[in-house]
Image (cartoon, rainbow, N blue to C red; front, side, top):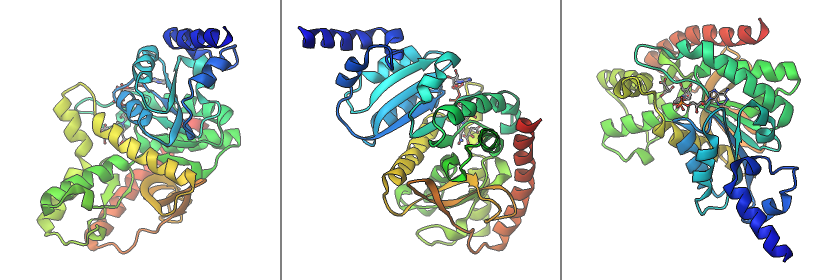
Length: 355
Ligand SMILES: NC(=O)c1ccc[n+]([C@@H]2O[C@H](COP(=O)([O-])OP(=O)(O)OC[C@H]3O[C@@H](n4cnc5c(N)ncnc54)[C@H](O)[C@@H]3O)[C@@H](O)[C@H]2O)c1
Ligand SMILES: O=C(O)C[C@H](O)C(=O)O
């Protein structure tokens, strides 16, 4: 009888989204235990999980064997997305959270928080044009992280990344929880694009190509280091010009092709999962996990407080930040342009929190 009552509680918890969302601490813990599926792993929250990036990102994270619990938070549509994804027969347990009153439950106990919440660009806009709306969204979500899971690794996708990461850092500093190793702006899509476009030019499989992309995540701040690609290859000046421009404008290429229906979502979800997976492997203690990310570099790479660099990921997040390495003349000139724009964007983010 007892087992049968537990089974029914489990099933109704899945079918009644509001009961399911409230399961922690309100009497559904037995049902919760039975729902766990037994896979050990990390607890991951996606904030903005019902959006264009959030939905495929949630699906791909549900497929990740390193994830045991997946929390999906949004201000709209999470019950439907959660019900849908929770039917996938993979190990991670999925829970949905809707609206600010459920943000704290969504965040409590998380090891990794991924933030794609916020508005995307339309044709003719820059990423900085999103600042007025997205700055406040990221600030509020980071206040929740500081309160509920201050030790979580945070992956920020919301644009403008060059400003939203400094905003997050300021929020964490004010709360006394800032650990520069745990805050990472996601620039992986720039690397994914660079690998793809370079492979096209060289006639290679993109999986064989590795292009470091440093600087930031907007226009000229996106600085592909074509002189450092693996496998080592050389480019004509025309190829260098074409590839640099295409990588820097990859986001705009998608925004224009979508013609008002948003920006990159599917390739971004792919890139976000690739990056989150690297963070989880680092957390697990795997060796030699190196990716590019926009991090607090505390002026150790350039004089700027934030910069996208190659970083080694480990149990605490960013364990090591690699120097830029030797740059050619074209890259040195690009670096100066990138630093100028980055300084402005970083300052804008810092000022927003301290105004
Ligand atoms: N870093 C990158 O490389 C990269 C790549 C692509 C897009 N982006 C950025 O990611 C963001 C999201 O893009 P998208 O296409 O998914 O947009 P979208 O509009 O499809 O989805 C955004 C989601 O955020 C939710 N949201 C809004 N306010 C929220 C809040 N306060 N708390 C929680 N959720 C909230 C919305 O309800 C929506 O579901 C944009 O800012 C976009 O520019 C970044
Ligand atoms: O371009 C955008 O606005 C979205 C994203 O930053 C991208 O690079 O695709």
